[in-house]
Image (cartoon, rainbow, N blue to C red):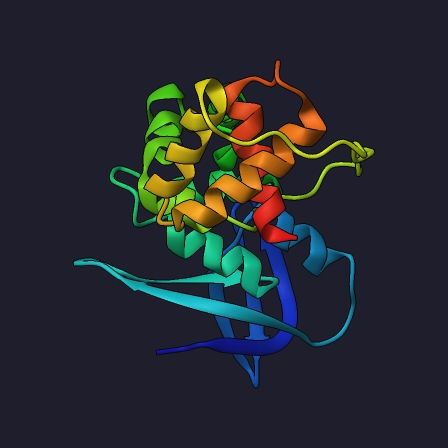
Length: 206
């Protein structure tokens, strides 16, 4: 299997490019993000490659970095999300933004990806494996001031639901409780569940 290719971009088209390597042109399917990075530079360029074999074709997918390739690999494991839909998602959202949308259950944001649809967006967000992938990968928001008061214990209500959500993602309960307590200390008791979960994930990623 081909893992990487280094060569000159011979041509770019909607959905991919031809990379010339030692006189051989390799047809690669790529996200818009990767294509933009390719066209912004000159000379030989290196792409990470994922090879997918089907009954009637061997398709090479090219990625500008490992983060995008890993996101692609995670997406195509979700039922009904094939390589083409995965590239649609990665054309609209970089890996960090995608992780943030999944961790925060931002369904409208993901459903807004052209060609994806609400049903597929919901399936991606609700897939436990995607939630685990998103853990620690979401882009941090601007730092918020930390209260000098002790963080309240995550003992009931929305806090307890947030702890349960993190435990369901495979975290140990003590870690989940500590992360939610810190998040609750910054956001306050009125924090919404999804926001609290998202902030808890970011606490764990610090």
